Structure formats: C-alpha cells, structure tokens
Amino acid sequence: MSERAAPYYCPYCGEEDLRPSEEGHGCWECPDCNRAFRLKFLGLLAAGFTRSPGDRADDTVGDRTGERSTTGARDEEP
Image (cartoon, rainbow, N blue to C red; front, side):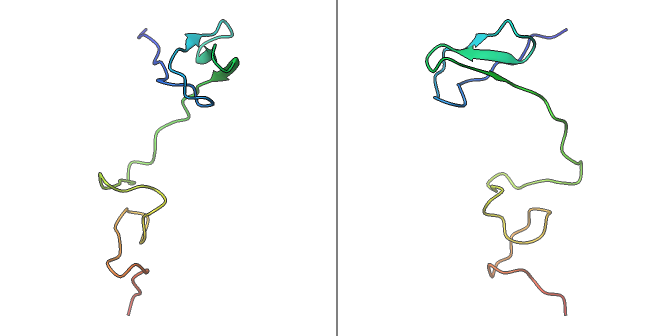
C-alpha cells in the first residue's frame, strides 16, 4: 500500500502545520484553528473532457470541450 497523500494547508485557516487524525484514513487536524477535516477521493473526470493549460472553469466561454469563442459569445450554427 502506498503512503497517504497529505494536504498542503488547512482549508479553513491556511495553516501548513497539519497532523493526521486518529479518526481514520483521510482525516486531518489543524492545531492553529482547532478544526478537523476529512479528505475524500470522489473519482476521475470523464475521459472526453479536457482543458487547455491556461483555462479556468469560471472564465471559459463556448462549448464544454474547453474551446473559447473569439467573439465572447456562443457561436451559432447557420
């Protein structure tokens, strides 16, 4: 079995000093904000969905393939 992946920072306060929790796999504690949280792998994205390296989910205009329209609006079919 491989070593567990560790989060880089607390999702609540941003502190980097995290410790594994005794609650089980994927549970972490932050001593700075005194919170505990759990990480869970949900699954893989569909194989057909790809993004360009500079794309972000909230600024993509166009279809779901990640292509951007040059006019800033959806391209209409004739």
